[in-house]
Length: 88
Image (cartoon, rainbow, N blue to C red; front, side):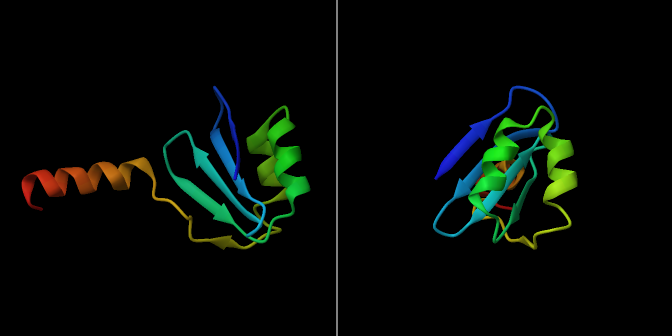
């Protein structure tokens, strides 16, 4: 799995699974969106884009189907920890 992180901007991390052609995007608000089937070339271009969020909006969001992310967002994990701790 390939991964690229961004220190600022709306997109903070992207990961790509070549075998599944699965692209996951972690946003600045900790949500995760996923798209499939996305060509590897698009992941590479997104990785190098001067403004990844704009590239995403122009080239991915309406062209590829959104799917269930392979991993949960951080807020889901935090909620589970609280439920486990307090029996919610």
